[in-house]
Image 1 (tube, helix red, strand yellow):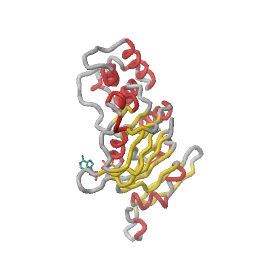
Image 2 (cartoon, helix red, strand yellow):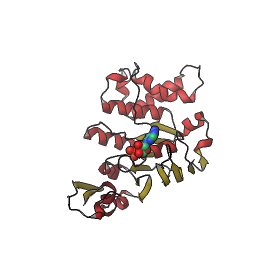
Image 3 (cartoon, rainbow, N blue to C red):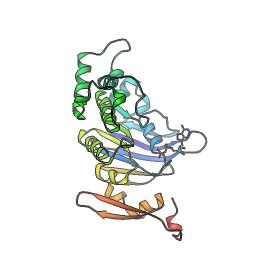
Image 4 (cartoon, protein in one colour):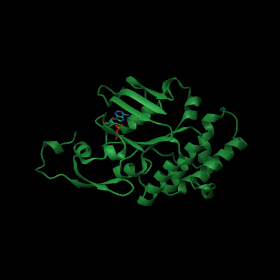
Length: 262
Ligand code: ADP
């Protein structure tokens, strides 16, 4: 369980997060959504203690994240950040084994248990057959699977992902998010695509200019009255049998004040 209460943060003087609350129950997938620059990545970084809030608190199962030592933090939270992976000449299995690094001492080599965990993680993302490939030669979707496997090999009970579907085609976008949902791990995922968020997230937190505009189930958050002023577009909501979906169209020149971005 992750709880962020009244989190504020600024890189310099200006506040980038202003009193943000976010709560993730065990096993839930919570989507952080909002326009560019609304503070999603910054919020995610406060959740794994890469940034320290100016005010407010972030807790894992009731304990402050900032008090966790690096090894303990690595046991609780695995991160798939947006930068992806550096262009290192590593095989896929070596890349996944890096997920074990925080769990062992500096000078020890990988154990059988590490190799078992890496193999299990690759199987879980359906990428066992890629194990001996060079990571740099994989497609975007394959790389993303392997980076998720690296996070799983870490065996943390919380998973944070920043835009895991970036640069993926539609099929892989769905495959990756379906996979994340099936893992059953407490997850926070930053997503741009509101329709993917509708389909794969249990709950959503909508940020605009560093503040929470709405939070709740996709059904509660993805309503035109909430989304239109935040994104400055027209929204039509479709009630699909399995989830809500939104259709967007640009606003007209003569739209009124209520369509201005919030
Ligand atoms: P989002 O993920 O929603 O696009 P970010 O959290 O990346 O938003 O950014 C929120 C705001 O913080 C933006 O105005 C961005 O320019 C600013 N920002 C992000 N990272 C830095 C940084 N390292 N230094 C200064 N400002 C930053």
